View 1: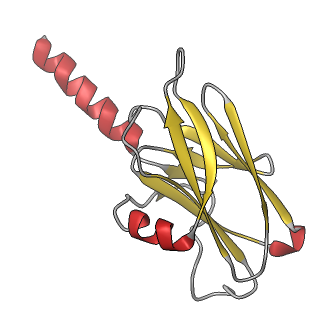
View 2: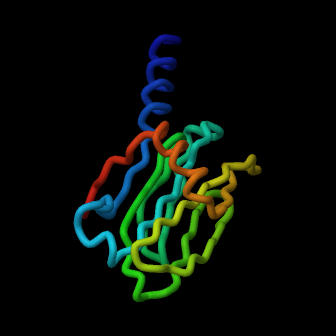
View 3: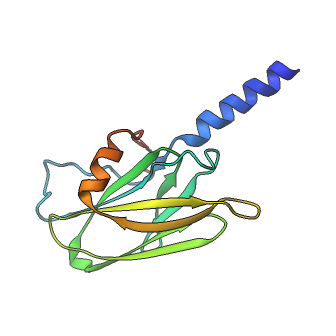
Length: 143
């Protein structure tokens, strides 16, 4: 019985850590000068069993798991993009978009009462790129 519980816990922890993205990953070769790229990364293993919902302007982008990231292209003609992370709380960050620019947002995971809390912070590209190389790529599931 103990082995069954341990196996179920292991399967749950592995499956819940993976990020799931509902939009296509950005293609660096197609139109990258005309688009902006937003990447939300979660380098922490804290609350590894929790996946946070990530939205851009109320459109569901995906679920962000521990030690992974989500990345997507955005048309900068909309000028402003509001990124939202939903956990025990809702955290928002607004970004002014420019063509050909990459935006990196770090999701901070904090202790909550019943569930993990989320915070979003804009990162510098020099700080973000070394971190992304150590994170897992998301699974893409386009409806």
